[in-house]
Every structure is written in C-alpha cells, then in structure tokens.
Length: 273
Image (tube, rainbow, N blue to C red; front, side, top):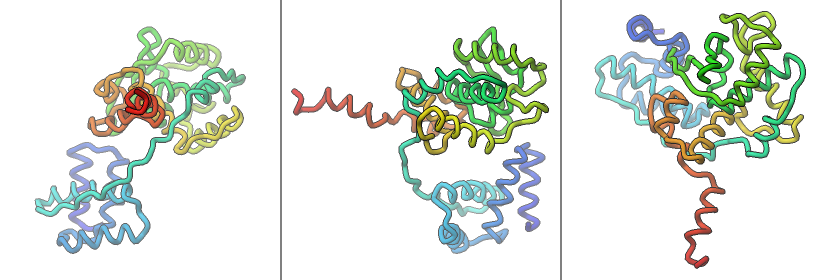
C-alpha cells in the first residue's frame, strides 16, 4: 500500500472513525487504483480493467465510491462516473411461503433459534448481522422495540409485533439468557455465522415444501419492505426502520410488483370499459 493511500485510510480511521469493515473496503478498493496521482486515462483504464476481470456494475460502483472519496481527499478535480446498474425484480417470499414459516412449530433449542431468526427478519426488516448481534438487553418487550446496531455502528430503535413478542418471550423463558447474552448466540455464547444461518434457512424452506428465494436472508428484508409499502406504510418511515442513509435506497421498494400492476391495469384498461 502506497504512503498516500495509508495516510488517507488513517485519517478515515482515526478522524472520521469509520468501522474496521470500511477500512478494509478502502484498502481493497485502492488496490485497483495502483497510483497515488491518477490521470483521467488511468481512471478509464481502471474501470476497463475491473470489467475485464468480470466485475459486475454493482461491484465496480462499490469500488468506485471508495476511489472517488480518495480523489476528493487529494483535491483532485477528477471523478469516476458510476456505471449504470441493471434493475432486477427483488427476490421475496410469497405470502403462502411466509404463512408456512409463521405457522411452523419447531421443537428444541436449535430449530426454535433458527425459527426466531427468520421471524425477526420478516417482522422487522433487519439485516441478518443486526439480528445475529442482538443482545437480550436490546429487546424491550414492554414497548415492543428492538435496539439494533447497523452499518457504521449506527444504532436505531425499531418496532416489532405482538406476535413476535410472544415467540421471543417463550424462547427467552425456555432458554434463559442473561441481559448481556446474544439472543441467538451459540450454546457457548458466541455469535452465529451468517453462512451457517443461510444454510439452515435454506434447509428449513425445503423442509416446508418450497424452494428458497435468491439471496434468501436478504429476501426477508425485501419481503418486509414491500409488504410495508403495500399496506400503506410511508417511504420515509420505512427509511428509518431499514436504516437507509439515503431515501433513494428506500424508493426502490415503492416500485409495485407485477401482480399489483396487473390488478390496477384491469381497473384502468380501456378495453374493460
């Protein structure tokens, strides 16, 4: 790593107080840049090199954001324009699939812990790491609020349902935890791994009779958000619940699904008059 890159990262780490994950993101992204004082030609070649290596537009843009932050820090007038990203239909669970999950009655510590994780994801729209990092003291059962720590170590309080409170209360009663314990931790009190949870959730979906959607764990978040909008929830409130820093991130959920558009079309079609 070149000296100027290191200085930039140290300032971000010690002055801006970014997280270790963000520090690693800067390091990984700046490796693509190669030179401390790039020209416009260098930046174009950088983008072409990333594409030739097989990076998708989203992957390129992730690294471009970090590199642009560095360029701004150096005072350079140059900037890499983000690539246009393709828009895909967000993977979600169908309502019948959600019903199969919510009516499932697991027995034993491990199945009940897994079931609780999925219910929290579907009921609150949390990211999987936020759920796996949740401590007992973060669960306010009286006021139906969870205190979660999101990206950039930002905390937020989000509501949960009476139905989830019942499941959470029974789980904590049957498997006693101390306030500082992780709610869904291992028997030894350590944090569960994301890949382990993903594997087990996929197995659960299969055992319940349906194929898990793509990006299975994040599909829970998509499902929550789309259902929130469909039932009249505000995009502004949804932004706070999901912990998005920009409203643009949340607006994508306002795009109606195909079945919603079809239902509206039947009412407005000139041929149906």
